Figure: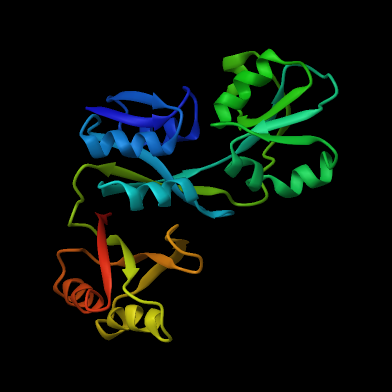
Length: 260
């Protein structure tokens, strides 16, 4: 089985994938969107993509890709994230690089210790570490084991702002319909008072507990939004099917999948 992850080797996405697929063939990509696209085409059997972080919330690129491409969710993986600041040597740090999520997860540390240092985004934490290896004065926020891989010095350990857990989706071309938790995307037909209440009410009527609701712009019109909804229950459960049937009277619904 070919499993797509965000590269290069050593990323948190790789670590998450190895928890679930220790013996499978991992394929590395430069962006989350490319992984989702390849899975949708059937070029990869699975993809492992970050969807939510305990400090920074939803991962926008993942959410947008799940809207754009036809893929399904078949499992989830939780991974504790512990960041280190790494650099080539003890030279004065003039630039700190990392993935946008990692920079945001270390905001307090950066504001306190490096308030005047330029922050730049990289495609992944390990890509940032690779650049830090090549350029003096550039530091990276990356997994601590990146120091050994690239011959870097650990300047500071555990620089994240608090308990830092990232949730990853395992995606496939088709969704799973069995599991204890499920995810859907809701596209309201019209913007009018009470629409969100009407979307959520069927869950309450059926006694289904919602665990997350997050809005994203449709990117078609200013002020127009769609909703990611996670809830407890399987997409094969009669209560869930009745709730979704009611929601479909006022909204389009995209099934992402059920998982344990």
